[in-house]
Image (cartoon, rainbow, N blue to C red):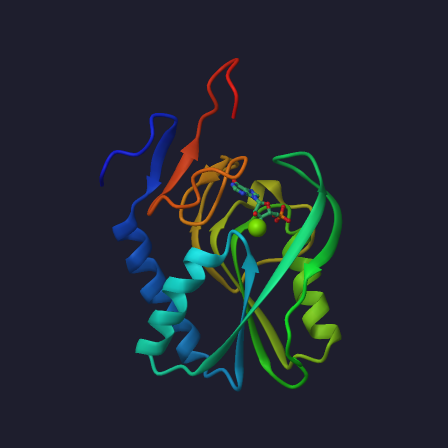
Length: 184
Ligand code: IMP
Ligand code: MG
């Protein structure tokens, strides 16, 4: 793996991620989704979703893509529990199989909100795919159906995930180590 920024310690390489995403896509394909709607949670889910939908295409899974932007009140790295829709999807989900794609499952408050919302709207199924699962942070009763990697309660960046808006563009997942006394 190419060396990343000094304060980002590589955790999952681009190669490991690609292998994992291909496996997840074949698992999703095996579930034979009907009228699949992939709902990408912005912003963090964009990179994982871009790779996952291409792998799904290679598995002959047809789908539509929508985006949702959710926001939770709270501090920079911890969510308060209150989630709201900032930008909604633009299609009906009633009777459809939905796949919600996001970067991290941490407290679970965001994805529990998203899944409940789609089920309330009449989705036939609402599955969740995340790149990183951090079970230690869980506050809501929810698990993802498809998980890239499980890790301890690190603050991870890269592959869509940010620390104060930085590092989303990294092709790998790393642990962000803030410099003592420094910004970010
Ligand atoms: P939740 O706590 O499961 O609701 O996660 C809310 C959001 O916090 C996730 O979708 C991520 O955008 C963000 N988040 C949680 N943990 C991390 C992390 O380690 N790195 C970057 N973003 C994170
Ligand atoms: Mg997010």
